[in-house]
Image (cartoon, rainbow, N blue to C red; front, top):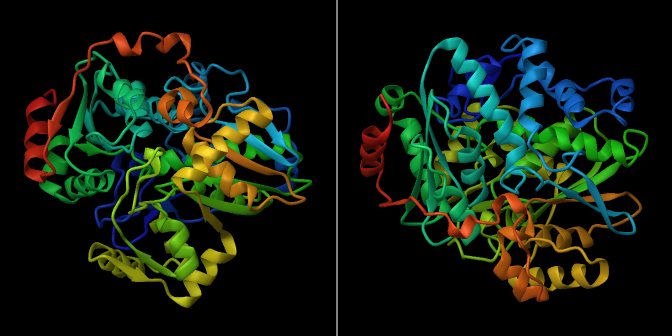
Length: 461
């Protein structure tokens, strides 16, 4: 298995190299050179397996020779040992043929833990073998940052710097990033939006002098290992509902397109997914793109589902690469146009995308109404991001079981939950003192030179 850039002008890498590199040197994202369907009898054998066993089955062909079978099994077991639910990603029924996939039982109460806990173990194993140190810089709209800090805090061979938009994450999300005491982790509140933070991160990767000097690595969803980890729970959820002997559908609340791209990979691997539904909040660039064929940025409007307040969905480039027949030059041209404001997708490519995805959006009022309705009819308390998914999923229900991804614990967004249904969503016991812990954060300008200077100063030699 080799990995190629979506822009077609970077070296092919092994899994380990692609993981440690993050963003390709041509600015593209790494994807496998081939995604081969699995045998039907293998998928039929998944029901009854543990989450860790399914994870090994999904990941092993993509890892190649980077880790031995024994190493990979041990890494997976360590990654998920700290999850609070034995099933790791349990299903809860909301109504006829509608299920929630609870992805918030990890240490930071968000779906990002499934990928980040694994990446932390993969990085630690790879760097120990190489005898190297790296500097991880990430951009977050809320959950990625806390999951990364939790996964890498205290590691000797890694320094972590997380950029988040100042004043645009929930208080719980912020405190999860700013209260860890380990000296190798740093929370940086950038003046601007998530898109600004993500743009500065990409600028750092494209500054090759800085990139090589600090041995820069990325753990955002631009990292293929993140996507691979998320493919697993599509298989565990679907097999619990009878796949592959009957199809299932998924609705995915998404901003950066990584989580639903994992579902797209699961379908390529042979999972019978009837519908893959993109659910967006009022920052609905992905929904608008499927409707109009134009991928055009507009202003980010703050919402009660802040992890989706995004106008540049990085992982969308990965699916565009397939939509354009894996023509890296065509994708590179489109990304240049995006930097100038946007582009129109070719007819063939938009037909491809519409053949693989449906979409919908939820306003703030609809999000709040969904939280209230679900609580009144089922007793379940859901976060605003999950509510966006549930609202959009309700428009696509049918004879096929629909699974909506519940991406975060409601306690991460207590104000929105209280506003919607009058219920307090308490933090679990291991976070009960979160609001009493001292914070450690640096506010930084939206300026590449200033950010690079700060990272040079604070990283350990």
